[in-house]
Amino acid sequence: MTTENLNAGMDLDDTTRSELERAGVIVSKVDFLYNWARGGSVWPLTFGLACCAIEMIASATSRFDISRFGSEVFRPTPRQADLMIVSGTVTKKMAPQVVRIYNQMPEPKWVIAMGACAISGGPFKQGYNVLKGIDRYIPVDVYLPGCPPRPEAVLQSLNYLQEKIRGMKIEDDPAFTKGRRQYPVPRFTGTDLEPPFNPEVWSPPENPNAQPDEPCESKEEASV
Amino acid sequence: MTTAAPNYELLQQEGLETSLLEISMGPHHPSTHGVFRMDVKLDGETVVELRPVFGYLHRNHEKLAENMTYLSSMPFTDRLDYFNSMTNNWAYALAAEKLIEVEVPERAEYLRVIMAELTRLVNHVTLVGFFVNDLGALGTPLMYAFREREKILDLFEQASGARMMCNYFRFGGLRNDVPEGWLDRTRELVDRFPAFLDEYEQLLCENEIILSRTQGVGNLSRELAVNAGITGPMLRASGVNYDLRKVDAYGIYDRFKFRVPYTDGDTGDCYDRFMIRMLEMRESVAILKQALADIPEGDIIGKVSKVFKPKPAEAYGRIEGPKGELGFYLIADGTTKPYRYRVRPPSLINLTVLRDMCLGGKIADACIILGSIDIVLGEVDR
Image 1 (spheres, chains in turn blue, red):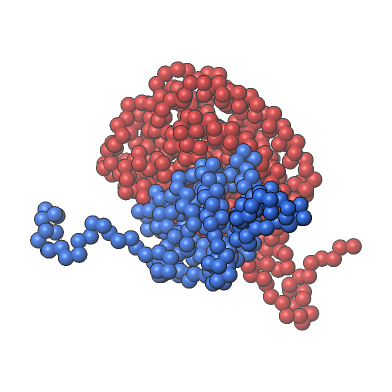
Image 2 (cartoon, chains in turn green, purple; image 1 turned 90 degrees about the vertical axis):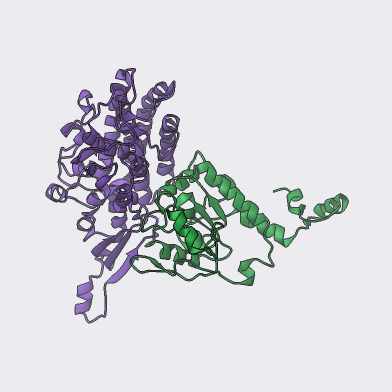
């Protein structure tokens, strides 16, 4: 990294900066330094759920090489990971484990919902056993559509995440303000999840077509 | 001098308080090949009880298929065993073609064989990569495997438009013809592939660590393999000469000369299962060479309407998938949708002997045995 980059966050005229650099001093903002370091070393969790996991692995192999963006260190344990790539279909039986693993990750932590299934249930949405989007239980930073997304798309989503990280401020960083974010783990009752979503992070979208005081007659007419 | 591991019962006789260690491996575990869980009871390091738990990826594939037309299920079969979408398509197409009786054109039959054998290469090459990954060789063999896989996926993408979820087969043929120059590019790849296999074999087959960790581990006897309904490379590693490409000769497999590698059945251990796959890749290359030399010009799909109503009947179509016998069982009731749609998943049935192979072994070997079975959870849970 060059010193220009580091000094980029500061309003410093060139003469002062070059004088300081000659004396071996670099002036920068703590925010900038933090975000630069965090964005350049996002450690993803080795967490494969379904088909998308294979493309996630492919993005780490030689042709696509996620290590160009500093994220090749896949960690099998959530305790050492920064980024959870929810790669694939989250079923109702699996959702409690996903939330539990998210809770175990230290701050700062980010989530990429990879693939149509993780975003909304995807092609299996009509089924009885598929969660309609992991964002019902944990906050998602980047949505990555595709079935499955190409490895290039995985890399692009990582770039978007790095962009987001560069905009972070320490004063409202959850790592410093709230401590480790933890969300209640849903309970799998055998047929459904209890509760169906976490109101802290997600609420059902309002139906734009809903008519609150619709008279009964018009409904009957519509059905006829 | 080596000391034996402290035995749980011996320690108890000496008056020490001991207990079996009960651990839950998975569903988030790097060597469970997806979301699979094993409830293991350990005496020291020895596995004394193992209970597989699955269902973490149950995506109601069968139920969804019963609520849509026959052709609409085709893209869903891609997502069963997501390494081998082409062979999944083929098995389903075979089953449905029995219901509607359609002639498959010659060129389509050849292309089907080419796609299936390329898929077999993809599957075996990545399986070996993951298997060695489970042994602790993180990285290099898997990188080699994925390098070759990408080249084949490029061909799939050129033909079908998708890397993994090809959705390329149709009842009575294929969706579209391959683009111009595709066959030449495939010939080039097939010509180069043996060089890669040489390199891979040189790297792995006589590796000291692989030999000592896989030989004599996870033995599967011929009797148990047959009784449990094991199919595919795993059955042949236990010494049974059974390959549906020879037995059924579905498609046009009777036109090709190839050998079916199988062992003498003395051990049926992890090394056998690993080697069978290495040998099968050579045979796939042989089939590919013949198919690419003989492929004729012509139509790509027979005359089939997109929505059809077969007469009430039952049909079972099966192929030799890279993992074993993959079958689709359909009951038609005269409507556009199947009354019953059932998949015979080789992964699930091969997984049933996991407990028998792991008991008495070390916990670290359980990971290797699971890796050598070659499961994909999309197919196990469906």
